[in-house]
Length: 198
Image (cartoon, helix red, strand yellow):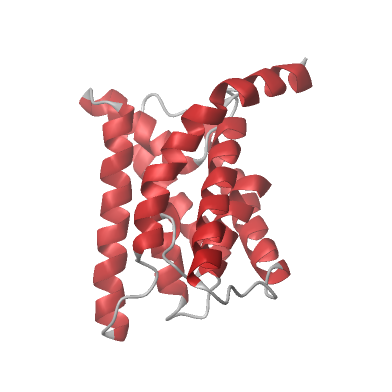
């Protein structure tokens, strides 16, 4: 989670467009007295509620740990953002470099999250419930979620500020590259996780 939080913080510091999953917390944080981390916790609490509503009979008490994971994740985001306050790219190539580095970290972080097969973040838990409920495909559901979050963020930004914040070319780059890096790092990270676990 710390690796993923660092990836999100780098995408924010790049100021070239936020990753789709963090676009909504970021845009809302610009207009309310709550941090990106706090709003990320609330977003994941909403995902957990939707997960329960989609599959109430299959929902187990252990899945409530996803809320605890969301709290830790949100705190990590705020801590890393505060720690990287000094990081201000001064050129477009530096912005692109930060976006790519954020995608690498998100890809690695997602692999470490999924490898132990113990606890998913609430966003993945909700997607898994939606796939089971509607007999869909996880990749398609992930794309639908990401696009929906970006569209809602875009609409909210225009409604709140009459301009677009947080959605730029970096958002598109992240939408493409994170999945590529997950595929690239999946086998090495899984092997490392197995060695660490036992």
